[in-house]
Length: 149
Ligand SMILES: CC(C)(COP(=O)(O)OP(=O)(O)OC[C@H]1O[C@@H](n2cnc3c(N)ncnc32)[C@H](O)[C@@H]1OP(=O)(O)O)[C@@H](O)C(=O)NCCC(=O)NCCS
Image 1 (cartoon, helix red, strand yellow):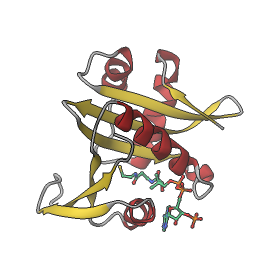
Image 2: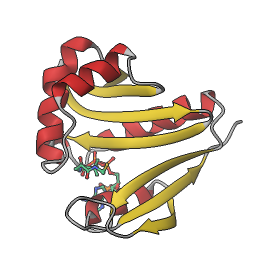
Image 3: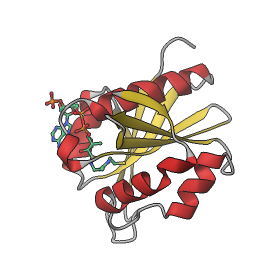
């Protein structure tokens, strides 16, 4: 398993993962290509590669020391094998290296799997945003303190 920055060649694989993992609000290929090209301020894309295939990705943004995990997704057939854990470790390192005191994220309160993953990783709820998502779902805002500033 390799965790590395995404390249333009990874766009189709990441777009396919987005469509499966986030059917309601997948990032389109053009937006992903812009992020990978560095055209979206502070936004970075990491992929997990296994035997030449992209099996997961994470999108982060770090702007003025505010680090956010925009999304993280793993292919269904590769879940529960630690792939997201490896991606998250790389995101944490990246955010800490840029001086961010904490890593923030928003997750749907209905997304039990992701909530379990984030809680296991040490994230704690800091806020709730009712009707944050288009379908009326509430967002839970979570934060993870970063060490080694
Ligand atoms: C959430 C997600 C990224 C987790 O990826 P993953 O590679 O399966 O996670 P890991 O294998 O690193 O999980 C580490 C630990 O987190 C917890 N965990 C992960 N997924 C879980 C689930 N569906 N239910 C309960 N606990 C879960 C477990 O404690 C797990 O350890 P274990 O497998 O030894 O029990 C993956 O389920 C996914 O892509 N979901 C769809 C996209 C999504 O909702 N992303 C998050 C919102 S941005």
